[in-house]
Length: 274
Length: 334
Image: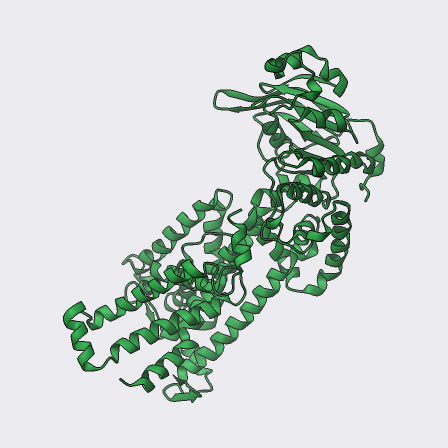
């Protein structure tokens, strides 16, 4: 798997930027981000207490919600207001906090859905199997390869609805990779995943930067953040209050204060934030 | 009791004009609800649009009948656009509100005095289907028998054309739903946001599905008025929409052969119950009239009540319909 334009992928310019992004709900300023730059081919964690605006910010970046003010760019291109389906075509894909496995589609159908630019997805071509069956076979081969990597081959022909919560998380991420994204945005990828599965999920996420993919994820579990994040962005009350490496963030007093008054003084790495 | 007569009627109903027309309309609804999850509560509106595509063309424009057939497609497609553009970006319930309202608006408008010069008003449009029947290889007024089935020549011709269209449409829908296009529709039915995140323009696909199912409904409406040889606004009442829903639920939504089998079961039951009740021995009949007031009029009501009880039993013991899978049904509850 490769990302289309490797020359851009090599450059040092941030892959995603947000400038002056504001979103209010009624009187509440849910998101108010002055400037955020996401580094290319790194894993960036977005953390913060409940109600910090992480998921709203995620929705703004991925086109699921519209900004009131501000600008978002992907690889230098302004993408503010671009609908989600176009962003996927531009190489930005997301998963959801509440996993969205398509229950009544089989696992392999879920996977094949993820492929972009399918000829058979056009109405008139769909009527002529000859026009898309070759591409469909290629997609299936690719889907099977990803399923194998995610250890889901045994579920291939089962309804996705029969999967456990952890398997659904795996499927959702695997399906997102079928779009061959440059930016993978994971909304709480570890929520509800049992520890054994969580470890393999972490290993899979750690592989993505090596393939030329940037990862941005929202997470509550500090252990996870410590283990895989290259960079941590902390949000509170809609604003970014700190940025840094996981080690820096762990010892940042502002973060600790804003985040967990109750656990102040205890070892942050041993505290599960929920 | 004349069992020969009851069975003759029942057999003829099994694949009769109603089965054909309602099955086709249900194929359209199946595209909407079964595969895409669109809650269309106004399928009869699409039938009316299709029927008036012919009716208005012949009556008002005084153009050729076959041009009218072309307008069947145009009217149904335009109706789908009109209903879809404002609602398909919104939550699913808005489409159901708008479709049920639109189907009644179409009926009331078509029968209104203002529209009389265009739609024929309450009298509707008659004697327009001549060119269709001119092509019939069967003698229109003669009875033809095929095994247990017996129809007038004109109906044999309608059935031949109608079933051909129905089978071809069903096979087309089957092909579409096996393609990546159909997979995307089913994905949107399961979760629209997930589909959008994976690069699918959900609005666009829902619009295509609404148009396809609406046009299929329009063709069903046209076949119905050709068979009745008249376009009457009041035949397009909301009960028809819910009959189509009943048929789809009997068969099981999202399955290729559900509309045909569901429609056949529905109409066979209706006709069998009605004819049996009408053929009861005089003694039994008198007793029922005296005790539960089973008049001729009430028989028509009773058959719907009995079909309703049948539906209740179906919902209790086989909620997935004839063809649906219980395994798939169970996924909804997880």
